[in-house]
Length: 369
Image (cartoon, rainbow, N blue to C red; front, side, top):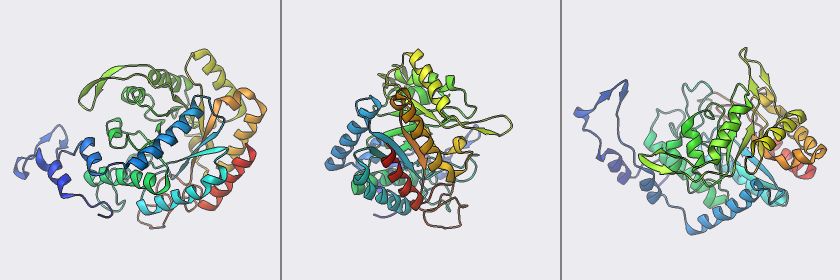
């Protein structure tokens, strides 16, 4: 089975409890088109092999040691802004796999496969989950299958268990057995369901500062994620145990006039360290986003920003302990394009570093650590 072809079993499952065409219902302002298969069904159709599960366990242990402060290796969460097509994303990740052994003594690479990532306004393209073909109409059933297959192929073919953004907490179970890292975005970090769901995950979850830059919002989200809660999740009453690996992501901020401000500088990191020390939170740590408001969306500045952060780490033992790694937007080709332009490996959302610059950056980071 190739591409995003939908197995007949899943079509029947998705349609089984759905009303016949003449019985379709409209409620509020929504048309109920079909009931999607739950995560258990999709996982049974596309299971993780024993070998892949064992590899993910190894990856998890190595990554979690870093966030617990038991390893001084450096995390690099790197990849396209949005995973738009399976072939180009897997090509990119395969190239990362070729670099992995050259830097493995210092860097742990976690590829970004962001399958829910929309354009900034949320209008139009909304990511692979909605549109496995960016030029076709939305198809959520094909999308659920496409995102699982992509993450599975990355794990099976390259040994990478990857990162995804938890834009929709209810969808996490479709990928819960293949991910090693989750990010909660700047526009989601204030949402209670994201915070509660993060408290029930057993992998590192990064909470970004909100777009306005208020660090107290981010710290409140981390506090909530590190504590246990009882709440409703996928139609169940659940109790989470709390996630001690929830941590900060600094991504800069944008003011009411649309002007961006960075928060990756030495003084920003010292301030965050002081906030963490007063908080009593477990496993203080931060991943620094080198793009977005930190770069003023000047994607080509990411290598310079990365090197300044490494310099700050050399200046202060406290900063060195606090900074666990970087988050970088990178793809095969420099920049970005509009959907429909068809340039292989060029982002259709935020602009990214191309491969040549990416390879140089990774090797430079390893040399400077």
